[in-house]
Image 1 (cartoon, protein in one colour):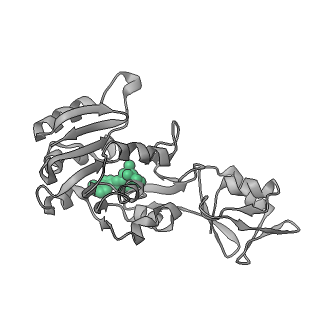
Image 2 (tube, rainbow, N blue to C red):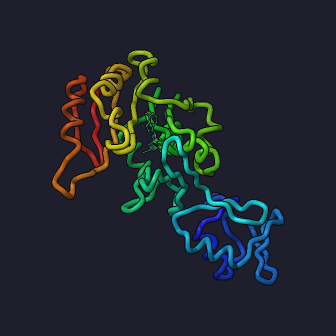
Image 3 (spheres, rainbow, N blue to C red):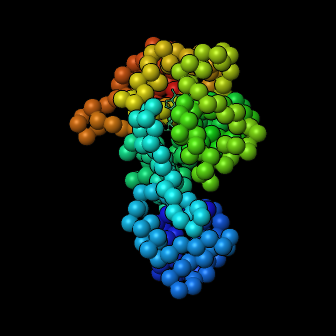
Length: 270
Ligand SMILES: C[S@@+](CC[C@H](N)C(=O)[O-])C[C@H]1O[C@@H](n2cnc3c(N)ncnc32)[C@H](O)[C@@H]1O
């Protein structure tokens, strides 16, 4: 059972039904004194709920009638990971950096936007960076097969508990890999994919995924007539910088054609 500030707030306001899976299903909660009793018998106090309401950028498990933050720190990667509630699908934060747009739109709308650039999204699809799996899961609605890659085991742990990432583990069309796409792509067959979605972390965090060598591989594994959507965001735009200039030059060098700037990214064809 997962609870965030939204649902804790609803209970404190006196609502008797809340969601314990971030908005997918709803269940009844009883009140006894200052305890809130959930359908499985676990209890939280008003004090627990007030604590949750204060932490509005964190989701919590309810375990043994206490709250446990859905977060972790890795000494190996030196990163802090957490599942962040948004009122829509949650996002994941890696040391303060969110992996989906959450300000101007919800992660769900962000994902719909990304998929809209690779229509009809059929055949074999490459999703380079799994994250919470939203692009892979949405692409799998129309694709025959989606190959998706996640390098970070701590992200995979959060995928496993996020109710909106379930499709990653139960959809046969999704071929999930735990590994580095920069290396793994070299093992993939030439002209294998009909569509590619490249949604890497920002350039400072994953330079190689913006390199000429990687773009050459994206070009190689794409079928003739296939389409790539490359999420770039718009970092530096407030300072008059455009990261897309350099990316476009490298994509051209790889052989991509019909390169276009689109909202928060680039599309191009082989
Ligand atoms: C922006 S998020 C992707 C979000 C994803 N499209 C979704 O729908 O949730 C980028 C992800 O790429 C992962 N990543 C970074 N470098 C990688 C690499 N070399 N290979 C595979 N995954 C990588 C990060 O750990 C992070 O989870």
